[in-house]
Amino acid sequence: MTCSPGRSRCSGPLLGAASVGGPILAGFVIDADIAGLSWRPIFLVNLVLGGLGLVLAVRLLPHDDGDASTGVDGVGSGLLAATMFGLLLGLVEGSSNGWTTIPILSIIAGLAFLAAFARRQSTATDPLLKPSLLRNRGFSSGLLTGLIVFAATTGLVYVLSLFMQQGLHASARDASLGLLPMTVGIIVAAGGHAWR
Image 1 (cartoon, rainbow, N blue to C red):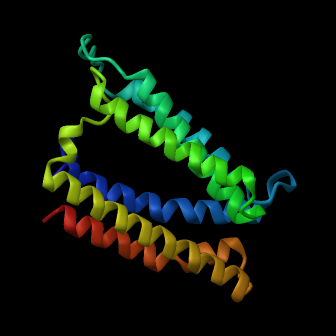
Image 2: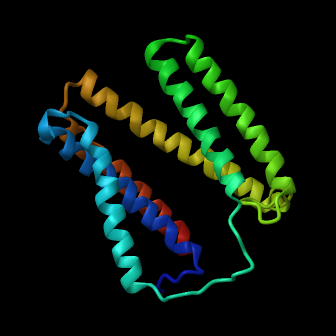
C-alpha cells in the first residue's frame, strides 16, 4: 500500500524516521562543533531541510488553487504565536536562570494569550481549530493520547541522552547512536500499528 495525501497511516513511519534521523544527525553536528558554536548549528538543519522540502514541494506536488472563500485567521495565528512565545520563554528562562519576575510574567502572559486564542476560536469566521472538533470524543481522546505518547517518548529520549553524555561521558554522536535501537523500535511499533 502506498501513502497518499488522504491517508494518515503514512504519518507513523515518517514520524518514526524523523525520530531516528533527527537525533543522530544532531549528534554528528554537535560533535563537529561547526565554527566553535557547539550545539547551536543543529537549528540550521531545519533551514536546510525546510528549504529543500519547499523546493521539492513546489516541483513535485500537484498545484491546487484551493478554495478562495476559505481564509486564515490572522488574529488567531498571532494570538497562538504569542501564546507559544510567552510560555516557551518563561519555561526556558525560569528553568535556566531561576524563577525571577521575567519568566513568571512570560508564563502569565502566555496563559492570557491562550485564553484570548480560545475565545477567538469560538468567534472567528474561519478559526484555526474548530471548537466542534473538541466536542468529538474520538478527536479529543486521540489528541490527549498523542500528547501523552509524544511527551513521554521525547522526555525519555532527552533524559537518556543526558544520562549517556553526563553520566557515562559519551560524546553527543555516541549518545545519539546509543539511542538508535530505541528509536528504531519506535519506527517498527508506529509502522506496525499504521498498517493494521
